[in-house]
Length: 521
Image (cartoon, rainbow, N blue to C red; front, side):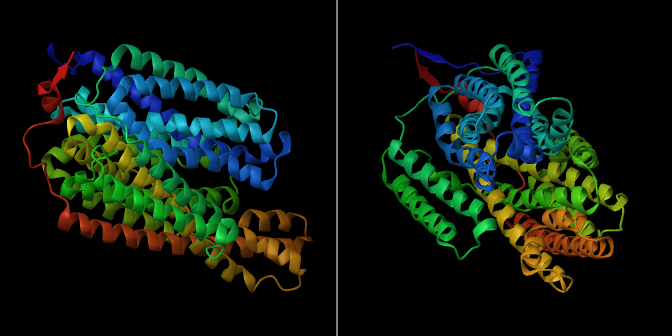
């Protein structure tokens, strides 16, 4: 029996080029989450898509992304993270090209599901490879740059979609993925080293099925909630069923000899509380972003490109934060960085709670800058703490577990914050609908976008009054959401200050552990 070791630390230049490839991989995924939102009206006209089909164009991607991340991360650990990452990138690129040529709504929905499964492979593995590429003193800087790619893609999505739809056919919003994926795949092929679990066990297929079905059920119910309400059986039924399956998954993992994921990871306070921070920020920030975009577009009257441009302070501040976090975290530790980042997010959200219809853009820009740098201060040290706590053979599975929890938190964030917004919006608008037919009143209360469309077809005084009332009601609802989100961030900051260890307890880094681990050749 020959025994060899894995040398996973590439040359200096190569590993930074590899990081660039991983960052581009994250960027294309971030773009694809939000780029479709701007294109939905166009897709409705070009593909004759119903409202349900438009919803499923987004939901198919979200469901597949949430459900398949954990099995994908585990397969990466066992089969090779680089190999699986390339499979994910190539599949994502091919499915994007096919999606751009679809002539039916159902065909596009199917391709969106394939894109979601591909994204579920890419997202956790692009992060889990960093410990094998960078020593501990460089890892946090690398995490910041790689994470910035995913986050920057979110606000860039509407901006890019608006430009593409103005100049090209609707398929261009998917076709644009192809050249980006090619660049990322070439970079990964040449500059990212292979790494995997040196003591890989057989895959727990029972656990994988339970996890996929459970997470998919929960996220499906959350997606249906804004349309059907929490009391509908198609909402609480899948959520309850998914929760039962997740409970069965946990019990199976504790009993089986070869679990899909070692739940003893949660015995590490550093891993557990950093994951909690990740989930809280995902819950609050996703809801805030999806609520702020309609405010900028409908209430303040910007088009899709103008909305994307007005989110640039968020992007710039995140870049500054990602670059500076490395030095600050080494000096202050994860506890202070994550807690202060959450408090900074709370401040930014309270600033947004003061924004009204006539406030102007200055306060919004300042708040976005505060939130952007605070996200970096929170997420980068938290992710570094997570990756630094994982055994060398389980970075893919551990990263996927964290990302799955964040994805579920983000889905709940959109649903719950949306419920708060809708309740405040409907209450604020109800007293201004006198004199309108009941069907018009019901439609106007469904969303500010519908109310604005109705207002444009009403006689001038009545239409102007309805539009202003809808804008004020939405601004009030957004204010309530921001206050709730800020309170969550404050609670999270207190929890991190109390329980998150400032620094890793062990001296050995995952890279050193991996290099020391023998592998049977």
